[in-house]
Length: 116
Image 1: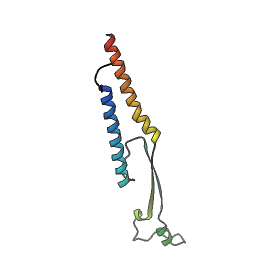
Image 2: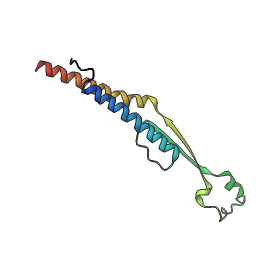
Image 3: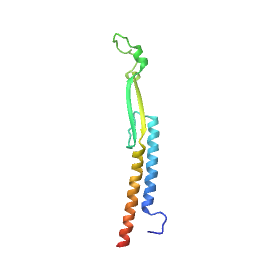
Image 4: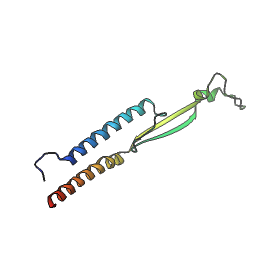
């Protein structure tokens, strides 16, 4: 083992952890601003969208089956319910999996370097 306090594998692990944390926080904040239109890139943030009719628009309808009033646009009639969840175990797997791989490859490299 080398005398350096941090080897390359440790540096890669720190960079990976900080990058993953920053990307997760940025994506979560973007989802708070636009939960329906934003594309989710990370696998550990889950989103469920339910679309229903706005109760105010439904009460204005004629019970006989008349159409929605012309002053209401289709987007005004729809009501979106968005639920955003964070999958913690999957985040930990995505966090520690590459860290363990970096450290394992670092140990393997040091052993091959020492033997050869």
